[in-house]
Amino acid sequence: QIRGYLPELTKKKVVNRHKRAKQNLEQKKEENKEYYDRNKRTKEAGIKKGDIVI
Image (cartoon, rainbow, N blue to C red; front, side, top):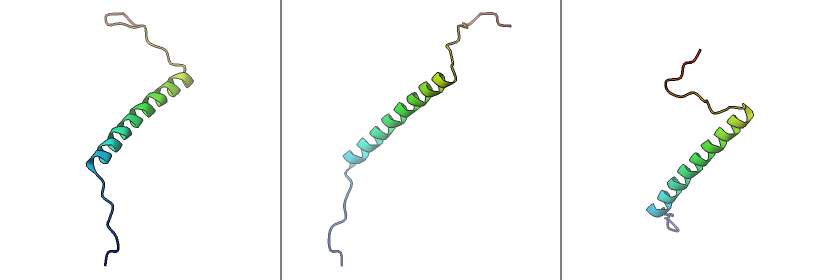
């Protein structure tokens, strides 16, 4: 015998969790990029298309 009902997830909650997870992932990627750039002292390259490099 089942003494109670099993919980059900509504689609709205599932969609919101996916959306929130995607936002968190993008935010973490940006934070990791900033951390790496800051600690490795990276700079923007001043090289443009057509420049001659040695």
